[in-house]
Amino acid sequence: MIEMQDVYKKYPNGIMAANGMNIKIRQGEFVYVVGPSGAGKSTFIKMMYREEKPTKGTIIVDGINLANLKNKRVPYIRRQIGVVFQDFKLLPTLTVYENVAFALEVIEEHPKNIKKRVMEVLELVRLKHKVRMLPTELSGGEQQRVSIARSIINRPKVVIADEPTGNLDPETSWDIMSIFEEINTRGTTVVMATHNKEIVNTLKHRVVAIENGRIVRDEQRGDYGYED
Image 1: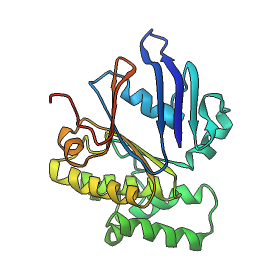
Image 2 (image 1 turned 135 degrees about the vertical axis):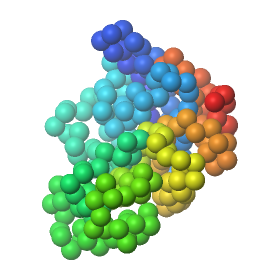
Image 3 (image 1 turned 45 degrees about the horizontal axis):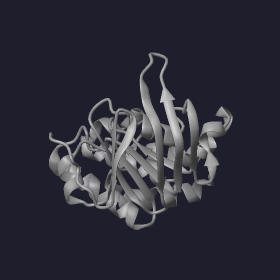
């Protein structure tokens, strides 16, 4: 599903955020990406949805090399990739329903299909009863659930999450993780950068640790491996 081959990323300021990364992630896997701050986790994640381009190397996602992809093709690829951010990135003037439906409207999906699909994903994230509310009327956890619903509306093969519980309290974080677990159970690949030691050590999945732009550990059902 995802493969990196000899990937390097050097920023203009000289920082080497990816220093020879090699990894394969199979369809249906759940992968935690861990490591100290500044290790290269965000760059690793961003290269998977072409927010960043590698300086050198190959990144294959669903059979397409993102490293060589023309910029005009990026929006089409992103329809196959769901992205969930730490700070939600919802459109503040749109309701819950409109925020989720927007991703289907831009690809000109039939309105009847949009309504059916939006209600399906809002049921999955347990927000059907808040379809008419604005983001400012929701709690942080509810906003993140809207963000997750938006990320899966196009039935992507992979969902990439960058610190999705970083701004949430512990109880809400477990609620959000239960949704990611359900998404993964349905066959979607999940790649998640996280600093949440308790979640990684409790909900066991593959753990990829990054330090100084290198993958230093790759374990099935691994532990977080760092002190808080």
